[in-house]
Length: 440
Ligand code: MEV
Image 1 (tube, rainbow, N blue to C red):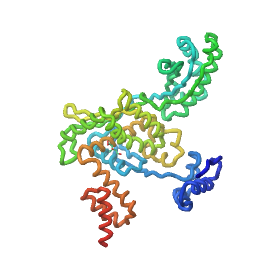
Image 2: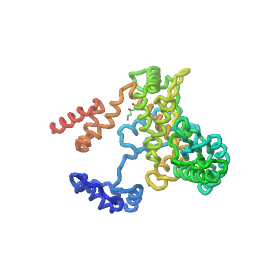
Image 3: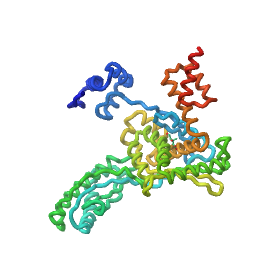
Image 4: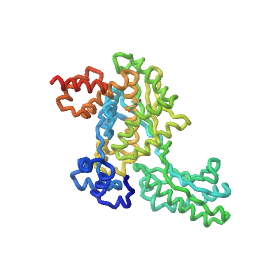
């Protein structure tokens, strides 16, 4: 059995690799070789990646692809996506092309407000606490000037500080519920720094507040942290067209297709098991762009799923309607994104992704990301209600299966041609490759 290690982070990279290889893998040499294969030859670039996190031993690649032809508010975008799932970029590109000659995507930012909270315990009169908070609000804002001044110069900053009495949920529990405008920054560091300053001011001022009793002066700050639930940092993206323009497959009329789409969305709206998969498909698009642009996909995921459950039941993030012979399909999602700070200027591919997107503001990026989610959902439901998902998915997955079986380039060429006309299941691909090899 391996024993715990002390001071792992202090070891050199080589020492870390040796330790992991010796203790956790069967073949030390092979482990070393795999890890080194993914190192970058450019030592400066490698060092940059090494220093993103602690204990880096190699790099983990994801494909970085492009989905072109996205017409968004009459501007044409090629959207960079970082994702491993075979069919996602193809599906996005197909949806983009489908809507290209139908007016494209129309988007609107509904709000950009971010939230942070100081959670604290106060044993005393809530009326007195409210008076106290109203009195110290200017002091809270003034004490955080050093943190906020640059953001304020650009038009952002703290927009409100409100006391929330949560004692019905938990004894003596209150919050400073604070709102922020962080412009092009995702704002996590800005918000958390402000909140920690608010907490320090809150404690200091409560000690000196003469109307508090001795108990009331002992405000206990539990934690100060932003919320990744950002229902007012919201964006909407929409496509629409006359029903007659929805010619997708020969086997289904435009009207029938439109009705099936609307029904599929309605099912995801009332049925959580379906809603989760439906929204997972949306996240295929959203996460891929969020990741390519160096944003925090975990924060985005958490916030979006909370939003999907905002009325107590987990529901579809997209909506569809048929009215006056017009098909309308739209999404509303909360997205706290940044186009400055974080990895945006540090990671060369992130920098390039933002350049490809024509250096968007955070507001523009919110709109692009929402479009990627909507397009992905359109493509998924389109397949689901017509051909089924496997046809397109397996077509894209074919290369993975062939690579797993070490197919040569010639074998791949032959079998790709073969599966253009035949259904590509895993067993059919294996069989076709075996047949091909035995016929030689
Ligand atoms: C697969 O990654 C995503 C889908 O399951 C989404 C959906 O079912 O809507 C195809």
